[in-house]
Image (cartoon, rainbow, N blue to C red; front, top):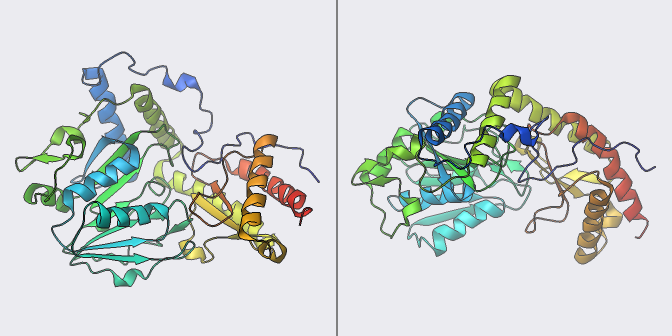
Length: 383
Protein backbone atom coordinates (compact mmCIF):
# COMPACT_ATOMS: atom_id res chain seq x y z
CA UNK A 1 0.00 0.00 0.00
CA UNK A 2 1.01 3.59 -0.53
CA UNK A 3 2.65 4.91 2.65
CA UNK A 4 0.84 7.64 4.54
CA UNK A 5 3.85 9.26 6.24
CA UNK A 6 6.49 11.35 4.46
CA UNK A 7 10.06 12.02 5.60
CA UNK A 8 10.31 15.33 7.43
CA UNK A 9 13.17 16.20 5.09
CA UNK A 10 13.05 14.43 1.70
CA UNK A 11 16.43 15.85 0.61
CA UNK A 12 18.62 12.81 -0.10
CA UNK A 13 20.79 14.36 -2.80
CA UNK A 14 24.49 13.43 -2.84
CA UNK A 15 25.52 17.03 -3.41
CA UNK A 16 24.54 19.58 -2.43
CA UNK A 17 23.38 17.51 0.52
CA UNK A 18 20.73 17.99 3.17
CA UNK A 19 21.19 20.90 5.56
CA UNK A 20 21.82 20.04 9.19
CA UNK A 21 18.73 19.27 11.29
CA UNK A 22 16.92 22.41 12.38
CA UNK A 23 18.62 24.63 9.81
CA UNK A 24 16.88 27.79 8.61
CA UNK A 25 17.94 31.03 6.96
CA UNK A 26 18.29 32.48 10.44
CA UNK A 27 21.57 30.56 10.63
CA UNK A 28 23.02 33.11 8.20
CA UNK A 29 21.98 36.27 10.03
CA UNK A 30 25.51 36.85 11.32
CA UNK A 31 27.07 36.72 7.85
CA UNK A 32 29.51 39.48 6.97
CA UNK A 33 27.57 40.45 3.85
CA UNK A 34 28.62 43.65 2.15
CA UNK A 35 32.03 43.48 3.82
CA UNK A 36 35.35 42.70 2.23
CA UNK A 37 36.61 39.20 2.88
CA UNK A 38 39.96 40.90 3.51
CA UNK A 39 38.53 43.04 6.29
CA UNK A 40 39.16 41.83 9.83
CA UNK A 41 35.64 40.44 10.18
CA UNK A 42 35.91 38.47 6.93
CA UNK A 43 39.38 37.08 7.60
CA UNK A 44 38.36 36.14 11.12
CA UNK A 45 35.39 34.11 9.91
CA UNK A 46 37.42 32.39 7.18
CA UNK A 47 40.15 31.55 9.68
CA UNK A 48 37.53 30.18 12.07
CA UNK A 49 36.29 27.75 9.40
CA UNK A 50 39.86 26.49 9.06
CA UNK A 51 40.46 26.24 12.82
CA UNK A 52 37.17 24.52 13.58
CA UNK A 53 37.61 22.08 10.69
CA UNK A 54 41.08 21.06 11.85
CA UNK A 55 39.90 20.65 15.43
CA UNK A 56 36.84 18.51 14.60
CA UNK A 57 38.78 16.32 12.17
CA UNK A 58 41.70 15.85 14.54
CA UNK A 59 44.15 17.07 11.91
CA UNK A 60 47.81 17.12 13.02
CA UNK A 61 49.09 20.53 14.11
CA UNK A 62 51.81 20.56 11.45
CA UNK A 63 49.30 20.17 8.60
CA UNK A 64 47.97 23.29 6.91
CA UNK A 65 44.40 23.73 5.70
CA UNK A 66 43.18 26.27 3.17
CA UNK A 67 39.94 27.46 1.60
CA UNK A 68 40.21 27.52 -2.20
CA UNK A 69 38.03 28.19 -5.26
CA UNK A 70 35.93 25.78 -7.32
CA UNK A 71 34.80 23.25 -4.72
CA UNK A 72 36.57 19.90 -4.31
CA UNK A 73 37.36 19.89 -8.03
CA UNK A 74 39.38 23.07 -7.71
CA UNK A 75 41.14 21.77 -4.61
CA UNK A 76 42.24 18.45 -6.10
CA UNK A 77 43.28 20.09 -9.37
CA UNK A 78 45.48 22.53 -7.46
CA UNK A 79 47.35 19.53 -6.08
CA UNK A 80 47.55 17.60 -9.36
CA UNK A 81 48.76 20.55 -11.42
CA UNK A 82 51.19 21.88 -8.79
CA UNK A 83 52.75 18.66 -7.51
CA UNK A 84 52.65 15.88 -10.09
CA UNK A 85 55.57 15.11 -12.36
CA UNK A 86 58.32 14.92 -9.76
CA UNK A 87 57.87 11.13 -9.63
CA UNK A 88 55.91 8.48 -11.45
CA UNK A 89 52.19 8.53 -10.69
CA UNK A 90 49.71 5.76 -9.87
CA UNK A 91 45.99 6.60 -10.07
CA UNK A 92 43.40 4.29 -8.54
CA UNK A 93 39.82 4.79 -9.71
CA UNK A 94 36.51 2.98 -9.40
CA UNK A 95 33.97 5.66 -10.25
CA UNK A 96 33.41 8.83 -12.27
CA UNK A 97 35.51 11.36 -10.39
CA UNK A 98 38.54 9.14 -9.91
CA UNK A 99 38.37 8.27 -13.60
CA UNK A 100 38.29 11.98 -14.31
CA UNK A 101 41.51 12.56 -12.39
CA UNK A 102 43.14 9.70 -14.32
CA UNK A 103 42.04 11.24 -17.62
CA UNK A 104 43.37 14.62 -16.55
CA UNK A 105 46.74 13.15 -15.62
CA UNK A 106 46.97 11.61 -19.06
CA UNK A 107 45.28 14.15 -21.32
CA UNK A 108 45.98 17.53 -19.73
CA UNK A 109 49.06 16.99 -17.57
CA UNK A 110 50.48 14.52 -20.11
CA UNK A 111 52.43 12.66 -17.45
CA UNK A 112 55.02 10.43 -19.08
CA UNK A 113 55.19 7.90 -16.23
CA UNK A 114 51.56 7.14 -15.41
CA UNK A 115 49.85 3.94 -14.31
CA UNK A 116 46.07 3.69 -13.94
CA UNK A 117 44.38 0.95 -11.92
CA UNK A 118 40.67 0.86 -12.60
CA UNK A 119 37.76 -1.21 -11.28
CA UNK A 120 34.11 -1.41 -12.28
CA UNK A 121 31.39 0.32 -10.29
CA UNK A 122 30.81 -1.55 -7.05
CA UNK A 123 34.38 -2.86 -6.85
CA UNK A 124 37.83 -1.68 -5.75
CA UNK A 125 41.00 -2.14 -7.80
CA UNK A 126 43.82 -4.14 -6.22
CA UNK A 127 45.26 -1.54 -3.85
CA UNK A 128 48.29 -3.71 -3.16
CA UNK A 129 49.57 -2.72 -6.60
CA UNK A 130 50.35 0.78 -5.35
CA UNK A 131 54.05 1.60 -5.60
CA UNK A 132 54.85 4.03 -2.82
CA UNK A 133 58.07 5.16 -4.41
CA UNK A 134 55.62 6.97 -6.70
CA UNK A 135 52.85 9.50 -6.06
CA UNK A 136 49.44 7.87 -5.62
CA UNK A 137 46.12 9.60 -6.42
CA UNK A 138 42.77 8.16 -5.30
CA UNK A 139 39.33 8.97 -3.96
CA UNK A 140 38.71 7.81 -0.41
CA UNK A 141 35.01 7.38 -1.10
CA UNK A 142 33.62 6.95 -4.60
CA UNK A 143 30.65 9.31 -4.50
CA UNK A 144 29.12 7.90 -7.69
CA UNK A 145 29.73 4.22 -6.91
CA UNK A 146 29.11 3.92 -3.18
CA UNK A 147 32.53 2.29 -2.71
CA UNK A 148 35.18 3.41 -0.25
CA UNK A 149 38.61 2.20 0.74
CA UNK A 150 38.18 0.21 3.97
CA UNK A 151 41.09 1.87 5.79
CA UNK A 152 44.56 3.31 5.27
CA UNK A 153 46.50 0.11 5.94
CA UNK A 154 47.46 -0.18 2.25
CA UNK A 155 49.27 3.18 2.36
CA UNK A 156 52.93 2.81 3.26
CA UNK A 157 54.11 4.71 6.32
CA UNK A 158 57.61 4.95 4.85
CA UNK A 159 56.39 6.11 1.43
CA UNK A 160 58.70 8.20 -0.71
CA UNK A 161 55.88 9.49 -2.89
CA UNK A 162 52.83 11.50 -1.87
CA UNK A 163 49.37 10.13 -1.15
CA UNK A 164 46.88 12.52 -2.77
CA UNK A 165 43.31 11.87 -1.65
CA UNK A 166 40.04 13.30 -2.94
CA UNK A 167 37.95 12.82 0.20
CA UNK A 168 34.99 15.07 -0.45
CA UNK A 169 32.29 12.56 0.52
CA UNK A 170 34.37 10.95 3.28
CA UNK A 171 35.66 13.64 5.66
CA UNK A 172 33.37 14.26 8.64
CA UNK A 173 31.75 10.83 8.07
CA UNK A 174 34.64 8.36 8.05
CA UNK A 175 37.87 8.09 10.08
CA UNK A 176 40.78 9.60 8.14
CA UNK A 177 44.30 8.30 8.96
CA UNK A 178 46.04 11.66 8.63
CA UNK A 179 49.52 10.19 9.02
CA UNK A 180 48.91 8.24 5.81
CA UNK A 181 47.60 11.20 3.80
CA UNK A 182 49.66 14.03 2.33
CA UNK A 183 47.01 15.92 0.37
CA UNK A 184 43.32 15.75 1.32
CA UNK A 185 40.59 17.72 -0.44
CA UNK A 186 36.87 18.21 0.11
CA UNK A 187 34.00 20.67 -0.20
CA UNK A 188 31.42 22.10 2.17
CA UNK A 189 28.38 20.80 0.29
CA UNK A 190 28.86 17.14 1.18
CA UNK A 191 28.89 15.87 4.76
CA UNK A 192 28.55 19.35 6.26
CA UNK A 193 25.50 20.08 4.09
CA UNK A 194 27.02 23.43 3.13
CA UNK A 195 26.74 25.50 0.00
CA UNK A 196 28.78 25.04 -3.18
CA UNK A 197 31.77 26.61 -4.95
CA UNK A 198 34.27 26.47 -2.07
CA UNK A 199 36.90 23.77 -1.65
CA UNK A 200 39.32 22.87 1.11
CA UNK A 201 42.82 21.47 0.79
CA UNK A 202 44.92 19.99 3.60
CA UNK A 203 48.67 19.52 3.17
CA UNK A 204 51.09 17.45 5.23
CA UNK A 205 54.66 18.63 5.84
CA UNK A 206 55.75 16.29 3.04
CA UNK A 207 53.31 17.88 0.61
CA UNK A 208 54.49 21.34 1.66
CA UNK A 209 58.07 20.27 1.02
CA UNK A 210 57.09 19.16 -2.49
CA UNK A 211 55.60 22.59 -3.20
CA UNK A 212 58.76 24.33 -1.96
CA UNK A 213 61.25 22.21 -3.85
CA UNK A 214 59.51 21.25 -7.10
CA UNK A 215 58.52 23.46 -10.00
CA UNK A 216 55.92 21.85 -12.21
CA UNK A 217 56.87 21.79 -15.92
CA UNK A 218 53.64 23.51 -16.98
CA UNK A 219 52.07 26.94 -16.73
CA UNK A 220 49.93 27.28 -13.62
CA UNK A 221 46.87 29.53 -13.39
CA UNK A 222 46.95 32.00 -10.52
CA UNK A 223 44.24 30.11 -8.63
CA UNK A 224 46.44 26.97 -8.61
CA UNK A 225 49.46 28.65 -7.02
CA UNK A 226 50.19 27.60 -3.44
CA UNK A 227 53.88 28.51 -3.36
CA UNK A 228 55.96 31.26 -4.88
CA UNK A 229 59.71 31.89 -4.85
CA UNK A 230 60.35 28.78 -2.79
CA UNK A 231 57.93 29.86 -0.06
CA UNK A 232 54.44 28.70 0.82
CA UNK A 233 51.76 31.32 0.20
CA UNK A 234 50.82 31.07 3.83
CA UNK A 235 47.85 33.42 3.66
CA UNK A 236 45.82 30.77 1.83
CA UNK A 237 45.98 28.67 4.98
CA UNK A 238 45.17 31.54 7.35
CA UNK A 239 41.93 32.81 5.84
CA UNK A 240 43.29 34.94 3.00
CA UNK A 241 41.54 33.28 0.08
CA UNK A 242 42.88 33.41 -3.48
CA UNK A 243 39.66 34.89 -4.81
CA UNK A 244 36.50 36.38 -3.32
CA UNK A 245 34.48 33.85 -1.30
CA UNK A 246 30.78 34.10 -0.52
CA UNK A 247 30.46 35.30 3.04
CA UNK A 248 26.99 33.73 3.13
CA UNK A 249 28.56 30.35 2.34
CA UNK A 250 31.26 30.98 4.94
CA UNK A 251 28.62 31.69 7.58
CA UNK A 252 26.78 28.54 6.56
CA UNK A 253 29.95 26.48 6.89
CA UNK A 254 30.53 27.92 10.35
CA UNK A 255 26.98 27.04 11.32
CA UNK A 256 27.53 23.42 10.22
CA UNK A 257 30.81 23.17 12.12
CA UNK A 258 29.25 24.60 15.29
CA UNK A 259 26.40 22.09 14.96
CA UNK A 260 28.94 19.28 14.60
CA UNK A 261 30.64 20.41 17.79
CA UNK A 262 27.31 20.65 19.60
CA UNK A 263 26.38 17.02 18.93
CA UNK A 264 29.74 15.55 19.95
CA UNK A 265 32.14 16.25 17.10
CA UNK A 266 33.58 13.69 14.72
CA UNK A 267 32.54 10.53 16.62
CA UNK A 268 28.92 11.70 16.60
CA UNK A 269 29.03 12.60 12.91
CA UNK A 270 30.41 9.16 12.03
CA UNK A 271 27.86 7.42 14.25
CA UNK A 272 24.95 9.26 12.61
CA UNK A 273 26.14 8.28 9.16
CA UNK A 274 26.70 4.65 10.15
CA UNK A 275 23.19 4.53 11.64
CA UNK A 276 21.81 5.79 8.34
CA UNK A 277 23.61 3.08 6.41
CA UNK A 278 22.27 0.43 8.81
CA UNK A 279 18.68 1.44 8.05
CA UNK A 280 19.27 0.72 4.37
CA UNK A 281 21.29 -2.44 5.09
CA UNK A 282 18.47 -3.86 7.20
CA UNK A 283 15.95 -3.00 4.48
CA UNK A 284 18.08 -4.46 1.67
CA UNK A 285 18.59 -7.68 3.65
CA UNK A 286 14.83 -8.23 3.53
CA UNK A 287 14.17 -6.77 0.07
CA UNK A 288 13.17 -9.02 -2.83
CA UNK A 289 14.23 -6.43 -5.40
CA UNK A 290 16.95 -4.07 -4.09
CA UNK A 291 20.67 -4.68 -3.55
CA UNK A 292 23.80 -2.63 -2.93
CA UNK A 293 26.03 -1.73 -5.83
CA UNK A 294 28.90 -2.39 -3.40
CA UNK A 295 28.18 -5.99 -2.46
CA UNK A 296 31.20 -6.24 -0.15
CA UNK A 297 30.19 -4.64 3.15
CA UNK A 298 33.81 -3.81 3.99
CA UNK A 299 34.03 -1.32 1.13
CA UNK A 300 30.45 -0.01 1.24
CA UNK A 301 30.02 3.73 1.65
CA UNK A 302 28.02 5.11 4.55
CA UNK A 303 27.50 8.45 2.77
CA UNK A 304 26.81 7.95 -0.94
CA UNK A 305 24.75 4.76 -0.64
CA UNK A 306 24.25 3.28 -4.10
CA UNK A 307 21.55 0.72 -4.85
CA UNK A 308 20.81 -1.52 -7.83
CA UNK A 309 17.84 -3.71 -8.74
CA UNK A 310 18.29 -7.48 -8.39
CA UNK A 311 14.78 -8.58 -9.42
CA UNK A 312 15.27 -11.08 -12.33
CA UNK A 313 12.20 -9.71 -14.13
CA UNK A 314 13.72 -6.23 -14.08
CA UNK A 315 17.13 -7.52 -15.18
CA UNK A 316 15.51 -9.31 -18.13
CA UNK A 317 14.47 -5.94 -19.55
CA UNK A 318 16.60 -4.05 -22.05
CA UNK A 319 19.08 -1.52 -20.66
CA UNK A 320 16.95 1.32 -22.02
CA UNK A 321 13.83 -0.02 -20.32
CA UNK A 322 15.68 -0.51 -17.05
CA UNK A 323 16.86 3.09 -17.15
CA UNK A 324 13.36 4.30 -18.03
CA UNK A 325 11.74 2.46 -15.11
CA UNK A 326 14.41 3.64 -12.65
CA UNK A 327 13.82 7.24 -13.74
CA UNK A 328 10.09 6.72 -13.29
CA UNK A 329 10.65 5.63 -9.70
CA UNK A 330 12.77 8.71 -9.05
CA UNK A 331 10.10 10.94 -10.59
CA UNK A 332 7.27 9.30 -8.62
CA UNK A 333 9.04 9.80 -5.30
CA UNK A 334 9.93 13.37 -6.20
CA UNK A 335 6.30 14.14 -7.10
CA UNK A 336 5.06 12.60 -3.85
CA UNK A 337 7.56 14.62 -1.81
CA UNK A 338 9.07 11.41 -0.46
CA UNK A 339 12.59 11.74 -1.89
CA UNK A 340 14.40 14.27 -4.01
CA UNK A 341 17.37 13.65 -6.32
CA UNK A 342 17.99 9.95 -5.67
CA UNK A 343 18.74 8.85 -9.23
CA UNK A 344 22.06 7.13 -9.89
CA UNK A 345 24.84 9.36 -11.21
CA UNK A 346 24.69 9.75 -14.99
CA UNK A 347 27.79 7.61 -15.65
CA UNK A 348 26.92 4.95 -13.07
CA UNK A 349 24.89 1.75 -13.57
CA UNK A 350 21.11 2.07 -13.45
CA UNK A 351 19.86 2.37 -9.89
CA UNK A 352 19.53 4.81 -7.03
CA UNK A 353 21.85 6.86 -4.85
CA UNK A 354 20.73 7.92 -1.38
CA UNK A 355 22.83 10.23 0.76
CA UNK A 356 23.42 8.93 4.26
CA UNK A 357 25.74 11.60 5.64
CA UNK A 358 25.45 13.04 9.13
CA UNK A 359 23.00 15.82 8.24
CA UNK A 360 20.37 13.22 7.25
CA UNK A 361 18.11 12.10 10.08
CA UNK A 362 17.93 8.32 10.53
CA UNK A 363 14.18 8.63 11.07
CA UNK A 364 13.80 10.10 7.58
CA UNK A 365 15.51 7.08 6.02
CA UNK A 366 13.29 4.76 8.06
CA UNK A 367 10.30 6.60 6.63
CA UNK A 368 11.73 6.52 3.11
CA UNK A 369 12.14 2.76 2.62
CA UNK A 370 8.40 1.94 2.45
CA UNK A 371 8.14 4.55 -0.29
CA UNK A 372 10.90 2.81 -2.24
CA UNK A 373 8.99 -0.46 -2.01
CA UNK A 374 5.72 1.21 -3.01
CA UNK A 375 7.28 2.95 -6.03
CA UNK A 376 8.92 -0.27 -7.23
CA UNK A 377 5.65 -2.22 -6.87
CA UNK A 378 3.88 0.41 -8.97
CA UNK A 379 6.50 0.29 -11.74
CA UNK A 380 6.61 -3.49 -11.58
CA UNK A 381 3.03 -3.63 -12.85
CA UNK A 382 4.25 -2.50 -16.29
CA UNK A 383 6.63 -5.41 -16.90
